Length: 298
Length: 224
Image (cartoon, each protein chain N blue to C red):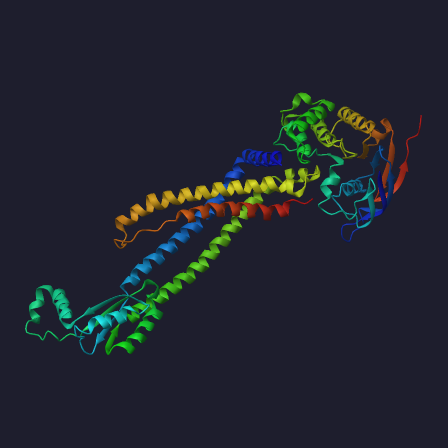
């Protein structure tokens, strides 16, 4: 058994050394295929992250018919905070609103002198939990607000939200189509490259079958070779991504791109990095297996 | 023991490559299979190592019916049969040693056993001093001797040779024939397909003649 395993490994390594060009072609094809899919994944993840940053701005402002008295305020605030969708509640009294207005006017604040301090309506500003920062969450909050408070008007950036939702939906759709296409193309190219490497060695496969090698005996070294090439392809693609993403892209983007100050470009987590390399191994084995079926006829 | 009963092999609509062949070859026999190109010699040999399945009829090798053999069983049949081709079918990227060792490794033989047997087989064909050469560095006759060593290294019950001297000159052919005779003397059944009539004139043995897939003559050598 051990002797067999050693023999298979020896043969896989010898094969790779005997056909360095074919072997390099297979490794690079897999590396490029994996890096392309991974890059696409990173672009999608980062756009989604950026988009979810924008939703932080989403809040519901409920303008009240009458200001709330100091006595009532804690109870109402508590009620609003009890909504599952709500993260933070902030009461803005008419006076607070006026102060904000004055701040915004800055040097022209003197225009407001003599104006009734209660001119602006009181309001509650509700910040939503991240998972409810969407049309659905907002509608649920509004429904509950109507039952709790005498609301005169509501603001929640309707148009912006609709457009944003459309954008996210479209983004996901495009990603799905492009992603599937990319994965399919990668599989196709890799399996064809492997087919080509096996085609170059069809004599060897034929002679093995001729001298009484079993199917398993013929296949195992090639599958091992596929796995090894896949592993190397995965590592090369990971190396490429680390260099191009972490060293080049992040540095250049932070210097001129309009990213929010607290926005960090996401890279593959250690688990995802492992998955990338593992995908290479799977790709190599599957590619070899499907191609071998075509070339090995006993 | 090789037995064929009414074996026919046809590829599609044209006339069959082998037609209604019934043959008995006892163990240890030496048989020439002759006939013009396209007479069905190669198809006949290919059916014996299960590279082709007969369309009709039965083939028995050592009382095992290989007509409907499962593909998983084919490797075990081939381990009893050595095959030699006109074009040698050697791996050009491997050394002489590796080419011969290949047959034993494919059968899962242990490493020390492999090296011992490979050396013996190459000594038998007179190439033990060329172990580390690549086939293309050698002459055609030497390459065919490697192929014969590969076929014989597994001690086959049957040796099939399909025009083994087709690419070789007369002198080399005689050397090759000596190797077949030696193998036959050790008990291996030898089937040699050739259209070279000088061979069986020089080394008289049983001659089966095929024509358009049919057996038209089966002559035993004249004694004395």
